[in-house]
Length: 391
Image (tube, rainbow, N blue to C red; front, side, top):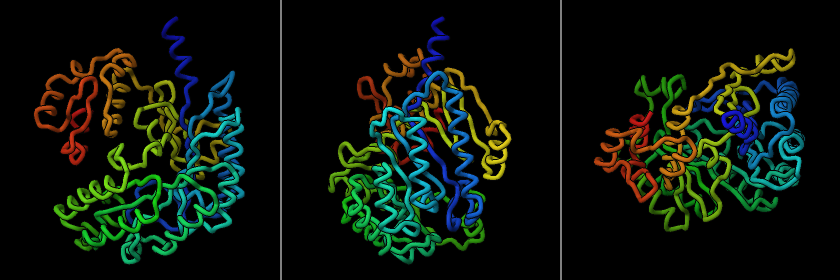
């Protein structure tokens, strides 16, 4: 009976709702995520399919859908859809997953090349209260090499227009370690970003992913990436400059003013439950990982014919969920609570990892602070190595 009750409780948890818009104007040469460039003719069909999938989750959660604590529209580029379409989609999401009408963190990814001032006003009126703006760089030469369609001036204008539209919570996405980038160029981008006073910054080192045009260029020796020492200097300078400007690093790639951390992403890092709508979107509910087909036409066809959209359904056992929670939680600078994990999974972390954890502690990659385990400063730099040890 206890196991059944716990399963029902897990089934009713849904802190996060993610809506995937897998369309963009042009595929960037570094992007390995599933997305389609152009294909405007599929937009209407895809929106209808999203609405159908919402009704599927209504049946899944019967007798009542739990309320979302955050909503996030990502892509691709969600703003290839008109502001009116996005407003209707958000209204449908709120009707299904937020029937109380209360306000929660509601984010949307924005490309400076696809939004105008009036679009931002409509998005704010529709209920979006947080923008994640895909700036990447404030230098036009770097933006061209990244295949971005906007200019640095357009990115700055997008931030100004967002403020004018009433957005009080802005996040800027930036990348370093770019082709042709040097430390001075990165510092210029960082300076311009800080001048705009966003509440949040997501800062990523470029990773050359297999299957992307950048990977092909790298194999041919045609990708002028900065040396490892220079990339490390970019990372170290970022930490110093952002701390001095009042931003706290709360996750490997995330920095925020106090109280402006991204609730939606924190739920991911805490391995919470969430629903993902759209082609290629993943849901994690009651220990089940449901992966949607990463093909827009197949996704639409399946929903139109009443078939499941999942390409894979994985039931995670208690130990698998525990390991994932540890690995994801260590991405956060606060780390993980040993007592909290014991309560949640009935597993003692130090005993479970034994010699592996002892070695990571000895190498100063992980530190223990009373009940909490977290990555050290060195461990944050070598995070991938640490996570590989804990899988």
